[in-house]
Amino acid sequence: MSDNLVKETVKSVGQRKGARTSTRKVRNTASPADQEAAILAAAASEFAEVGVRRANIDEVAARAGVSRSTLYRRFPNKEALLYAVANDAYERGMQKLEASVKGMGPKEALVEAFAVGAELVMSDPLLSRLVLTDSEIKSVTAKMTSLFIDMVTDRVAATLREEGAQMPVEDLLEAVEIHMRLVISLLETPPSDPARTEPQRVRDFAAKFLAPMIW
Image (cartoon, rainbow, N blue to C red):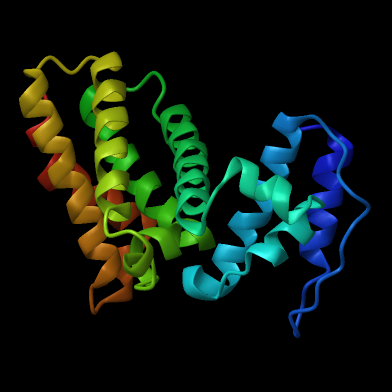
């Protein structure tokens, strides 16, 4: 996305505090790729702020500086837009996770991936809604969390393989899926002792109980 377009989209998002008032920017005349990126950025903010059910497509178009018809040419309905936004958010998260474990051995990479993945979901408002808190997503698509688990499992398994994991492919995928489901379970129902959610405690937990599953 061009620097000017990014600034315009961020500025539009930043204008919304308190009442939901829309300030339509000058029509976005950037390339189709930049328009689509602006739409995804605007939709991500809208979904994170108000959830799926209350998200307003006209508001997304206004934030992105495109017409409603332009938006619908690329994303025919809210579900399609949600899938695209989720895929974009997951991809950005995976890039951070993969960078964080570069050069580690498979067990160490698993520990770091477990801790970084949990932190990403907790700290990113959109990912938190998509994975944990927004029950309204189920009214749009019941497959969102399953798609997240499948995508992240495949990517983390591939990353662990690159870092030296030698176990059979199916065993590796199953082990990583268990880890993914455990992360989500722990985030959905946090321990009663807040200290157990501190980053080092999370890493110690993963090193003691999860890393031995990877070889």
